[in-house]
Image 1 (cartoon, rainbow, N blue to C red):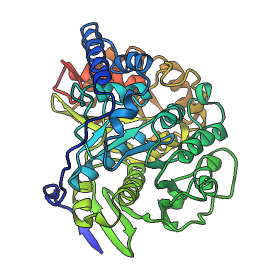
Image 2: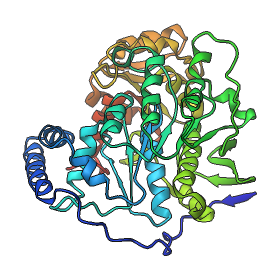
Image 3: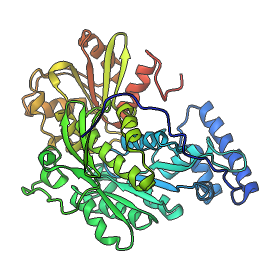
Image 4: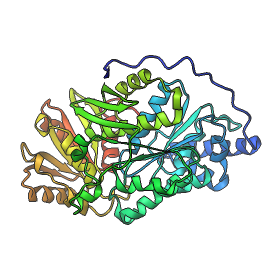
Length: 450
C-alpha cells in the first residue's frame, strides 16, 4: 500500500511546452476579443455577471471557442453530471497541473457554454492564441450537449444522474439522455461511474469509444445510495464493470484508492465522503488523459493538497469562527452531506432559497432524512424558504432554535450563536453565493472582488 500524507512537490519538469500555431482567422479573433473584453469591462462597471460577455461573443462569432480550443495538444476535457462537477473539475485541474501541464478551465462556476467563452476572453491573446495544453471544463448537462456539438471533447467524465431541478431538467431519464449525447460526441475516451446504473448503461451506446470506469468498493456501496434506492427500489444496482479506479476505504479524512493492483491511502483536505468519490473519478480521468505518462507519486501528492471548491465544504475564518459552507441541492446530495459530518461538533444552520438557480420547487426536501440532526438540533434556518425548512425539520423531530429569512441578519445571529464553535451552513446555490458575498465583507475571500 502506498500512503501519501505530505504536501505536493513541484510540477514535473519533464513536460516540454510546445509553441502553439497561429489559430485560424486571426483578424476575426482580434475583433471578437476586443468586443468581448469591452463587454466584460462594461459588465464589471455595472456589477453584472461573468457570463454576459460570453453571451455577446456567442451571438457575434459562434465559432470563436472552437477555434481557440482547437490549438490544445491534449484537447478538451468535459466534466458533467448532477452532483460534484465543480469539485471534480477543480481536482482534475490541479492533478494535471501537478503533472506539468498548463490547464485552461472555467473557474467562475459558470458552467454554461457562455461561461466558457467568457473565461477564454481572459486567457487568449489578441490573435486568439491560448497558452495551455488542455482545457478542463465543467458543463451543465443541457449546455454540455450544445457545447459538445460545437467543440467535440476529446475526453468526457460523467459523474452521476440524480433528481435535481425537476422544474428545469424534467425527469431523471431525460438527464441521462443529455449525458449520453455528450459521450456520443466525445472523440477519445469516456470515463463513467459504474455504480450509477444510468451512467454505466451509456457504455453500451459507445461501441467504438474507449470507456473507463470509477466506483466504490463493495464495503462502501451502502454509503452512497443511487437515485433508485432513494425513490422506492429496494435492490441496489450491482456493478458489472471492472473499475480503473476504486474508492475502497474511508477513515475520517483518509481515503484509499485502488488502481494498477495497488492500494493508495491519501490524507485529503477535501471535506465529505462524497468528495472522496469525486477524487476517484478525477484520478480515473487523469489516467485516461495522460495514459502511461502519469507519475503516480506526484498525482497522489497533489491530490492530498487539493482544497475544496468555493462553497463545497469550503471553510472561511471570520473573527475567530470557522464557517463551513456545504452546498446542498437535491435529496441525495443533502443526505450524503449530513452523513459526512458530526452535528455535535458545531453550530448548524440551513439556508434554503428557491431562486431559478436553486429550483423553485422545494418539495425535494421531503425526500431527505434529517433524523441525524435531532441532537443537538439546528441552531437557525434561513433563506427565502426558511419557514418551509423549519416545518420539514419539525416532522423529523429536529428542534430549530431560530428562524430568520433574511440572510444578512441570519449570518450575524449565527456567528453570535456559534460562540466560538465552528459554524456549518448547509445552503442551496444562491444562498451560498449570497453568504460568500456577506462573508467577503468581513474577511478577504478568494473569488470575490472587493
